[in-house]
Image (tube, rainbow, N blue to C red):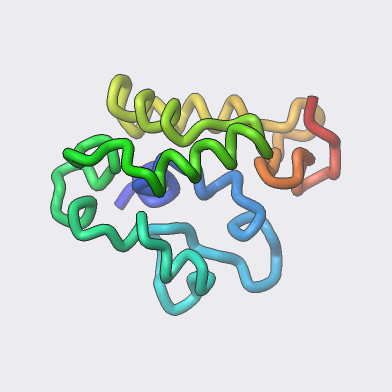
Length: 134
């Protein structure tokens, strides 16, 4: 699997900007990573474990007949409110432009202007140099 496919979760989350993925100790491999080193919350995630998602062609929520389900709407609302990011917008972009193009846009969007490191969506600073995001 390509990096972009591994790092974009079924719900539209870019695992590459998550604090659990970016931290040095007990690093989460992302929603598609090795389950033996996955965080318990990720391993048990109802969206990640959804049978419909596991059996659809794309592996993303937008292909489900219940899209967007209540769990996804709740997750989207929390991320829009707390982190200024929308899972539903992410999924629409993946659906429209494809996962590779979306991943490239995400790399630019969450790139630190100071050092080129990754801005964490949860902490709003660069994990490489500590620069605060705008």
